[in-house]
Image (cartoon, rainbow, N blue to C red; front, side):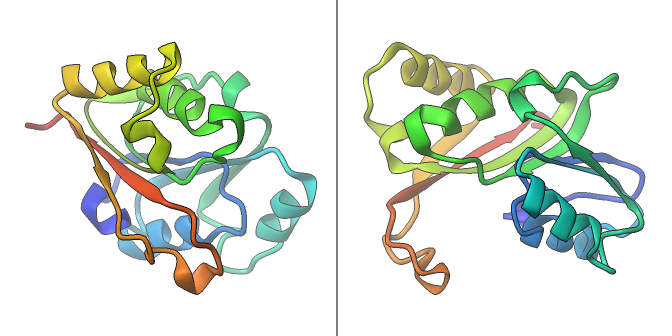
Length: 162
């Protein structure tokens, strides 16, 4: 997912809801000179990542609710695996799209329900992704088996450089 987003040196990169920091670490490895921002609301997760020797330098960590976050500038790359509960994934991605730079890229893991749910919010997300030339594709059922989950997921990809 990180490699598909193609983060590069000097680009502004965002990872909302960074959880245990896996995506942040992958971003830092892929683009060590990018300007990376990570957001996390959960106190324990935030402190754990803040105290991580790899992530404690070179990454701006913000302890807040992503849905209330309003950056001063847009982001060139956004990579995210938001919570799925009560369509949070859809809400978080819609908020992230609003932060995307004119030639930005967004990669997100979502609940597979985004492919077929007919509620207003989910339909609006699918329409917005289509307007931006993006796509939402189902992922194989065993994609997150190593993480101990069998939840069905989808990948959302937007690349505004095209």
